[in-house]
Image (cartoon, rainbow, N blue to C red; front, side, top):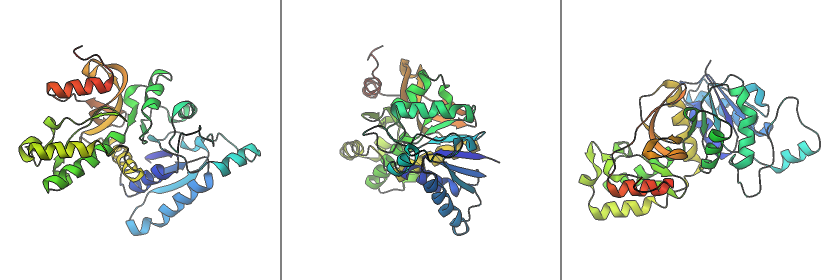
Length: 311
């Protein structure tokens, strides 16, 4: 039975679970959160909706990470709440087995990141074996880099899905200006979030035609100005993007997705996080592609990656 573990039952984690619940690629979906009651409640809600959406996925919620042992994919999302669970742990009302830290660092929001996120992945790693780890949040760029460098996790297994959410939002803006369906728009995302995202418009297309042939220079400038204000994507977009990536991993899809990964020589950059178009499979990233860029776009990408321009 194919199992997906989602760590965090917050808005992003819940959106990911909802999107995956309708997938035929998954047999079991496990929501793990410090607030075990909230995780179980969300799982129950989705399970009861199964008859309506015709989903047959087995859903469970817990605060015990040991139940995720042997999962096929792990999604690191966002926690459901803080105060109530923190009080329980401080009072000693902690269930048997390993549980997740309840209180995030100040100002971290709901996403697992920073030292706390790194400690979480270190704790979970023995249970997930060699399963791919999908980072669903918009603020987890540094966490991906730290997991690769400090924990030694192979870059193929560490995949950020937020660039796909950003690419989908950008495609929606292009479709609105071009008066077409977003499904006809193909584009990719490069650079590093949050401030260094670059869309190479010379590579983008609409219905098989180059974007620059369909849109006028004025329209393209308008689209570019709008797209810069799209970050960060909302929790539903982030969850949908994570679910798309998980489905592609489990089904060994041949579709190319925009992902965040630890660069391994692309653009002449190593050991830094960056966005690339990639194909994924059961073991994580199967192949990456470096687009053909104009001189201006290449300078933009290298600047975003913090690399030496002209290197």
